[in-house]
Image 1 (tube, helix red, strand yellow):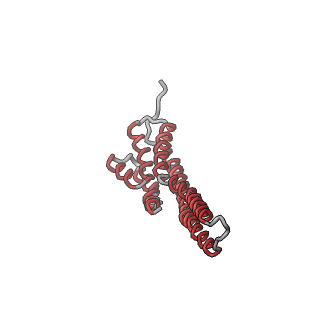
Image 2 (tube, rainbow, N blue to C red):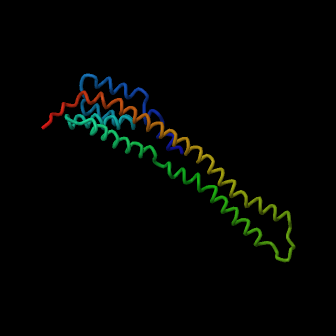
Image 3 (cartoon, rainbow, N blue to C red):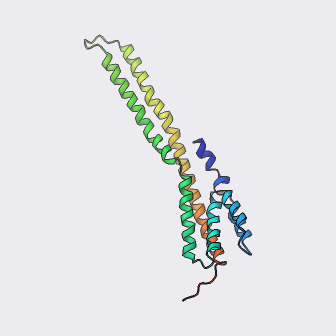
Length: 186
């Protein structure tokens, strides 16, 4: 959870003014390779935008569909990195209560198995044993509830960042297509 809290900060994923800065820098011409490398290292969104810039520089006659494809490919890779550890967190949230319940059931089996078959059981000891067995369920829930809350929170962040990156790419495509040389029919 701590790693995801750090990795999914706005500054590391999608700085708010980054797209406007890229559009401003590329108003007159495409930037140099070192500027594009700095952009790629800036954030996850910066890496996606840098992919589009590199595609236009590498293929001056790039078609709009090819440029969109480059953005899509970079976006899928970026979303995959953003979703790192989320499946693990979701699995913990799902499995923890079940593991706690399993511990409780095993404890209850032990308690009832240790009782004398002749009926000479002590109700106070039985109640104490049951309360101790229920700690497993409580611990499972103590792990599952925060895990589920953070899983849902991180899932929402990733979905929001995905939308932000898609919108940024959609805004940048027409801007970059101004630099693409016209294609001539052969």
